[in-house]
Picture 1 (spheres, rainbow, N blue to C red):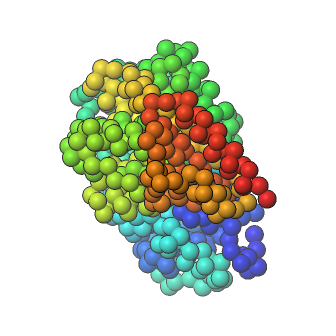
Picture 2 (picture 1 turned 135 degrees about the vertical axis):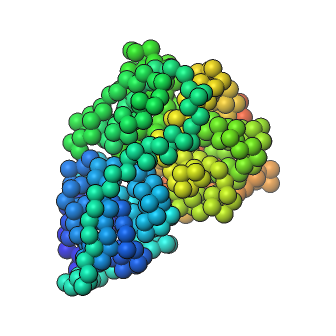
Picture 3 (picture 1 turned 90 degrees about the horizontal axis):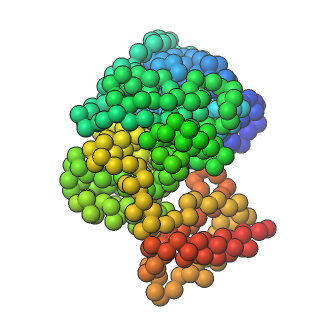
Length: 459
């Protein structure tokens, strides 16, 4: 790619770097990012890792060269998930960490997720824009006098011990669990955890494979769920778990193979965390809220709403000293995991709750799903998000409505509510609707709002 003629590098997003290889992200740019990361952050020790994508070795290698040529010592984790970078950066007290990953994007994509000391995220307002400008505008023909070294970091034992320390292993009992890694990076970590757990694990799509022979590893897509659901039913499993490519998100299926929306999992994990620390604060996003607020309040916790997105959640958790933060999109954040999101702790905590209460996943979520039926997140491509939001305000903001603008537009009525917001990462408008124990009302209001968005969102 030609950086000299680019006004703005398209692979730089609000929270991370993601683009098609080599058109939007290549080895030359990876090298420049490494140089710029050190220049902007002043890092002298940086952990790197890569997921299974075929472009990973070249991009990670050039990234490491850029970091080294800028004078930073590189600690290479090799093939690893994003949260392993979070762990290594914070646990080993390094100055920064970069995961080379495109998570659930198609196989010809790659990207990077960047953090600084303490695993604090680097986003557009905390250094990513400066890194982009420097990477784009410099030729990097010179190197520092004292080059950094590269060291292989064998971190996984310490990482897995840290995960297991967050779980009461004495409460666990034998369960049969279908595990679908989607040919992403979850498999090696689960394999290392397995000997410490009393579970029978049925593994599918297990080996990391950058060709993604079974399709893109994104369980949020309905077409990606059937393999896990069918395996749960075929094996008579107690539940199913599926991860995305870099396993910072995990998704749940009950014993009938039913996909459980991440919204209801937030309530379960909040309950588990409040058993550990009664009265603690729980952070949640504003897209779907009623079940989370009710569950946290009933468990003696303090629910706190904040803007959607990992940078906002992590910052608010630190401000509030919150023990846990949950997003309905299946991102779960833990104070005792350096305020970072983990795709491993959620399934360990949910199974701990199942075992401690001697109940099934379905029994734990059925009441919540009946009490607060939801639409799930619906995405719409629109010409102008502002025009659509103005139309929605004109139609739905009435004297009887409660309005909140923490993130997009949330409107609460007595029996139903909705949130509509522009995506931070894609040209989409996202809609979520829920009701109080009235699935028909929820579906009707979802249809009404969807029609309004489609009608006003056209060119």
